[in-house]
Length: 569
Ligand code: ADP
Ligand code: MG
Image (cartoon, rainbow, N blue to C red):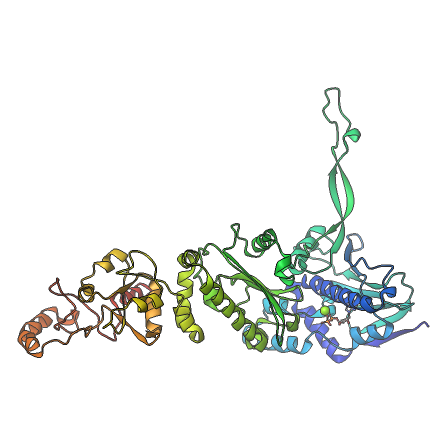
């Protein structure tokens, strides 16, 4: 039968509408993401129902989302042939209940307002749902017909407090939403413009499963026989014509959601280019469907070259977060620890929903669990790499891996086993700490290292004479990051890491009598050098040289002191 009524929005809906309209003004374009995502959900539901009731869908199961605009009338329209809604469903879904994690949205909004003013980036991360249409529109009209229903429903509102709803004729199943766009000011995005829509769909909805189609104007070359030519055969007038044609704006290639067996090498590479903006091939591809309490897809790439700005704090992280193929955020710092920020990729976690902010992510148990699993996968990949490939990787990203030692306590040992160093005995080749331990002399108890700026200077350092005489291997560390490694890695596999330049190496005990004989000389030197040295003492570390400068056991190494000075500390 026919029905018609005018209803007040519930208070919470009114609050939400007010918030959305007043806080998302700098992020207007997200309404398109929301409407496309709803259309895609509606098609998902239709496809699901089609499994059991195919007769309801036979006439129209070429699923697509269509956008059309009218620059004159200033309207934006989005049409889907999804499941549609009945009269009651419209009333229930749109109008009475503020859905879409409204509570979380309002909460985070209040919090960010208090702390540092309203941040548009924060707000942009929220799935604010259907009502976001009112950011861009003065009036929204939704016409829908549910699969299997005889009649259509029209819902209309200016978003100011009430809406009208009535039964109408609608020829086809699905939903059409029409926005009467707000007056645009200078510099505002024009949502009737093909270019603008193209750009927004690419950015937010590129991997939505169904085609987002728009009828666009294209230029096509005129067929030869239609080109007018002069006597020399040169064309007079146009050689092109303008035609209108349907075009799919999104790539739909959510390759992370496919089984790895169904994705070609080329597809991976193309996708890698798309997300990383790198033009060379990735070094490694990690594609996995995680199954368990929660399921999610992850596709990660190790680049073949380190970015030039790997250690700049303002550098963006390489991970993007999706929920059911809808983009949530890039630069997602919660998915991998800082030292793995060079990894490029995507995580699609259906359980996350669109309603998630960066602030909420930090606390989210699911996200922490994902992060843990991703890190494990990356470690396994690196551990299983063949030696040569790993060394190539290490040349590029070794510094980043090292930065994990002081920052990732939980995985410290696993990261330590990934370290590679050149040593006094390795002949310019990399060895691991495990290999070092294997090579250790029978009477050797500790792992010796020396830090500095220059490989040659280190190899020839007088500080190493005693160790060389004992035929002990010494790790040569020339990377500034190594100072932090040695500070946070006091031991590896129960072997202490010991600096070859600090204190007395305690290799053989110094004869006490001999020590006494030198006391007057040492006191004299100490007096002469005044505050330049802390202590003058006899040592066993030298074999050929007469004297050397060394650090005390608990002090900083000479190189570390230099770094600290250079960084102004
Ligand atoms: P959410 O998508 O998170 O549920 P929204 O505010 O975006 O929240 O949408 C509210 C509800 O309205 C949806 O759950 C759905 O039931 C209904 N809806 C919105 N758009 C459509 C559509 N195009 N087709 C069918 N139902 C829709
Ligand atoms: Mg939605």
